[in-house]
Image 1 (cartoon, helix red, strand yellow):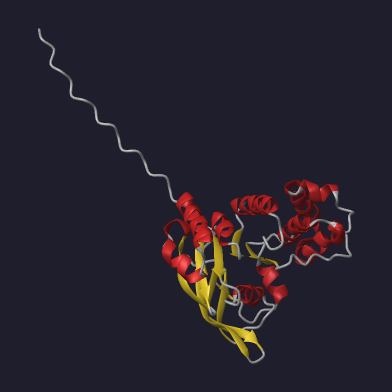
Image 2 (spheres, rainbow, N blue to C red):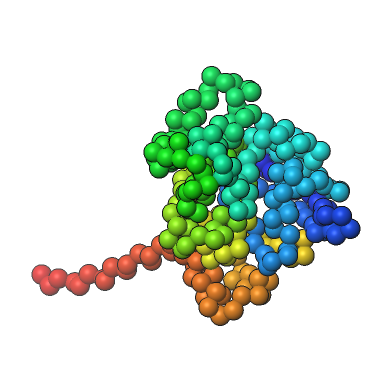
Length: 272
């Protein structure tokens, strides 16, 4: 029997005396781009840190490719095929582009060091600008370039699943479109994604399925094309302008309706 690539079951997690996730549950199938949407404080980024192994689970279960990884370390999860693009990109500012990529390949080099150069060349083929700037110090790059570097660094681990946390934060709309086009290409190459995105309209353009998070629980899920637009607007508290953007995005993702076949006019009898 086939199983989801990622299974999240009744997760409870938080910091100190504060509980942020109150029984979070959802599944992600292979090939999906699962969008996690919610208001500030809903627990979106905390949920990503829990999946990545940065924040421990208090109770509940996480399975990845059929294996229970709930108690695995972040490094073990990367070795299993999970990569994390953190909020704020968090590149190593004092290191060069290539040094950042080399660190992203840490588990790859331990597993099969002979593959490192081929994977690096493949990432450079996908991100030509990074090849050109491989000796540039990452902290001197623009926000959009650092975002590309953060994605490229994650790809150096050859992940099955990529966790992408708030990729549009702090970026101009044009740069966001370019970054989302890159993420779409990465997904098309076979990498499954979980995406947290505050910009709902942008996020719904990329996601194939959407999960609405409220106070640490999923309250609404479905394929983007089948989402209840009124429910999404209600749960996210969007105003008219953003609501219209969400509606148009969902409508654009719906499959095109086939035109009804034209009826032929009856032939007129021809007098002999």
